[in-house]
Length: 239
Length: 258
Image (tube, rainbow over all chains, first blue to last red; front, top):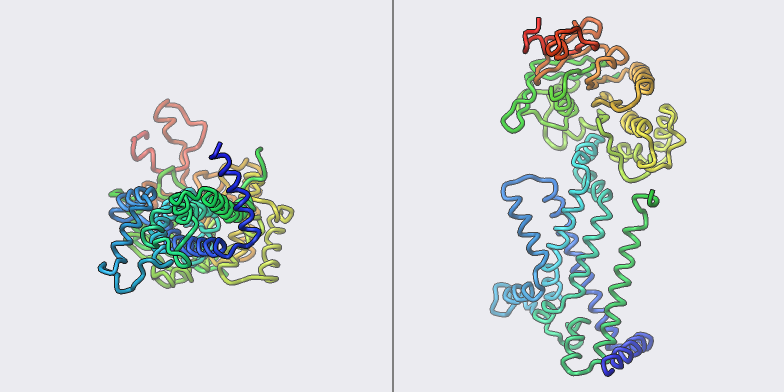
């Protein structure tokens, strides 16, 4: 029954913390949103054009590149964290930038996690389009940029699914944030690393509270993206 | 007045198979040409080359008397002077109005000017009442008209059509062909259309080229082409075919049925 008690207490505590606008919690929530927002943004910036390229261009080794992307879609965040740590450690190749244990380091690691997700799902979204569509759009006089924009709009359902998956991937990971960020108070503490820490301390009610806040945050962002995605549905209804 | 098109020593090779080898084809300004031939003769490939969507492996296309340079920027400018109606028109996931306005938007024509032109062509083609419909709410004939409006609204110098009215019932098709000929002739638009149904030719074409195995085997006015009644039917049954065989020299050459 202790577990149920902690859950209930956590839920009440979470609502309380939000309603009271607890500065400590708000800081962590804000950093989580900022870091995950930035990493999703950069992943989309890289992943969508890369997905389009893989979907439409034929080149030597394309199959291999796609296999690598598909494999990396399942990359454990801890592994991504380890790679990025190696790069950013003071003794590492990019050590002079002094990025380790900063929010920027977390963004970099999360981009490594999310780019394959966004790339793979964007590629699938573009490949769902009729193969002859690009030629028909070009025949209407589109420039390369106009063609890309038109295909982007046509594939928007699948592309927003890619964005949602990318955001879901980075907001839920803890291994990479912990390794390259270090869970430093007022600096690199995000919701997931805070939850791990509170559980380690035996502070279950606080952990529960943070978990509800994280869930609420994820739900809100995803709901906004879902409205964007489903707002203009392809079909009016089931025939 | 439309511009002329000319193809010279065009070769297209796909895989290791030569799918097109056209020595010469000259389409004068304002003329309507029909390209006919059996399935797999290279008709669509020829149309793609002439609509500047596919660069031939060899040979030159002349647009308005000047050889086409396939560099990205220049090819886009030339493409904007022509319009293509495809065999399967793929309409975008938006209203009929937006679909028809798309090519104008690519050319930077927006606002009231675009609205006026779209409205005009929707009315000419009798689909103004469909303006706010989505593509999946259209019948086959309506979708064909939309794809025709999408091309004609650009008021192109050259119009290329790839089996534009296939899968429509015969009366609708005949009506559309006659209507299209009137529109093209009224505006002097140069046109080239691909078909595998020779019944369409006299309704639309001034001149015909018969394509077979990637080569042009016959050109002339529709009524001057020596259509023959020889064909696989005769070859298999020894009887006169109930359908005329529209590809002169094709079967008889291969099988020696005569």
